[in-house]
Length: 227
Image 1 (cartoon, rainbow, N blue to C red):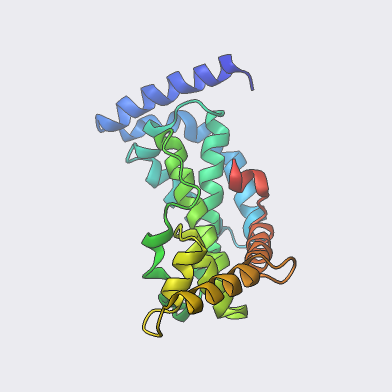
Image 2: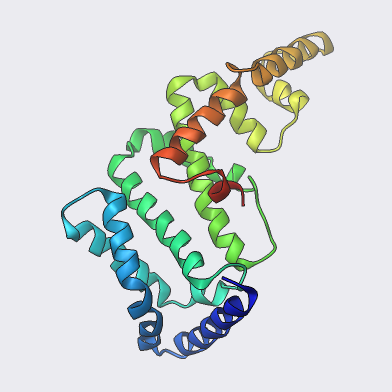
């Protein structure tokens, strides 16, 4: 789709934004009739179920979400409107699948710390990107949960890294309450650096493997995560 098409989508979105904010919920039908058949077919395939109830439920929640105008009003024409809405729907499908499989015990282990790493990959260029960014954070947390199952120590190092700590700060936090004289600190810094960066088996390598598994499970690729 070219720039001219994006401009048409932007004009449509701005019109919808104004109407939705004025309380005209029926305005959403302008895009509902266009995209619903495609979205329904895609959702059915993604959830791999012959039962239409789940697909219908996901899409109903999705369209209700659009009625509050926030998503439509945040569209800035960086991609086609269909692509923009498709990405958000895809994350809603992931949320649904995650809710069916997530173990509450694991969620409690990480969820109370989520705010600490919400700056991972942040991008303040537009509200549109902010919405997508928040969905990406959920995938990062899911990968971190997976790594916690496999190697809690490595997950702890990755979590500190995502918070923005350097090796010295990571070492200082790890040694808290155990003495932090210069020699011990230097040893800990070197140990953490080796463990974190070791090729193939280091903390970062393990985390990337977990994130890749999460992405593949949700039928996403690196472009979806990092663009």
